[in-house]
Amino acid sequence: MKRLILTLAAVLLASGCNQDPGPLTVSTDSVPLFPDDPGRRNLDQLTYQGGIEISSETPGFGGWSAIEISPDGERLLAISDGGAWLTATLEYNRNGHLDGLSHPRMAPLRDARGEPLEGPAGDAEGLAPLGGGRYAVSFERDHRIQVYDIGEDWSGIDAALPEPYTAPPGLNRLRDNGGIEALAPAENGLWAGIEHPAVDGQPHTIWHLGDGDAVPHSMHLSDGFGLTALARAAPGELIAVERYWSRSTGNRIRLTRIADSALEASAAGGPGLGPDLLGELDTSMTVDNFEGAAIAEVNGEPHLFLISDDNFNAEQRTLLLSFSLRSGDG
Image 1 (cartoon, rainbow, N blue to C red):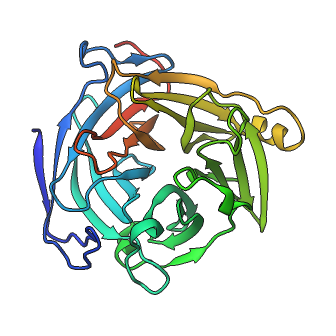
Image 2 (image 1 turned 180 degrees about the horizontal axis):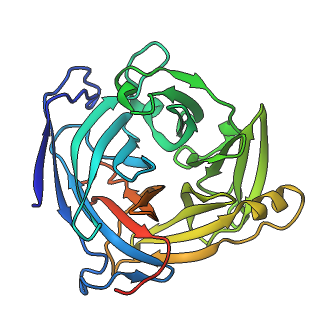
Image 3 (image 1 turned 45 degrees about the horizontal axis):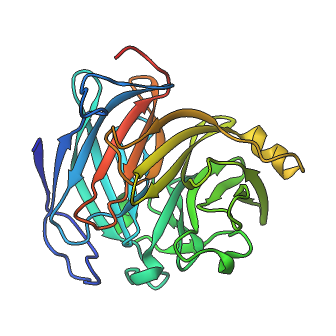
């Protein structure tokens, strides 16, 4: 076990309990990308830049389904489908590889009355910055998008109250466990991705939300894969996380690049195009239920960060992995 971290200022909603449970205790272990070949770092168009397994015995820790990373790559913001915020400082080794975190802090997501969200109302799945310390959060089961002003330093997670945000039409027709999983900033608004197509075998829908309008776009993803995260990679392009799971094969994750222009063409009546493959994770690698993604610069180079949702299941893990967006030696 690499390190043990205590935060005495934890404010946590744990299993419906509104009391402060005391210190938040988190441990981390560094993990290789290829367990059978720890020195191997290349993954198609990506290069592994370190990762950690995060665990905690604090009640309510887990279920991390979306993340943002500060532009300097030093801080983590996450939301849980158990209705919680998490902030922490990221740590790197002398090679610049992610190998730990410190100063973890949790707080409940709140409703408009200031009460902690509970049950289906707290199933937060997507997260995207709107600027000025304001963040959009998407929820499934009780399908909606809300905005929280937590400040640019994220110090407001304890008390931030939600405001409604434009949502796509037809939310009542979404699957209970297949709502707006993916959010990313767009010009004048947000991109919002639905996990599964409304009709199996049809293109996925990615909505552009903003200025009071909700415009649908079509994107062909891999057969059987669901869309679990979007991240703004650079002007004009997004990174998508596609997830497939079956009891017989376990988790498979495809990391792809989507051009804004391809989405815009589909809205204008063009075909729903497929994204470009950056890399694929399978059970021969360090993999789990990846649902969150973010881009930040580390040592002047763009890195893709992924976090997995352990579903509060002892057989799953919370993994935080980092990749540079260009291949290299390793």
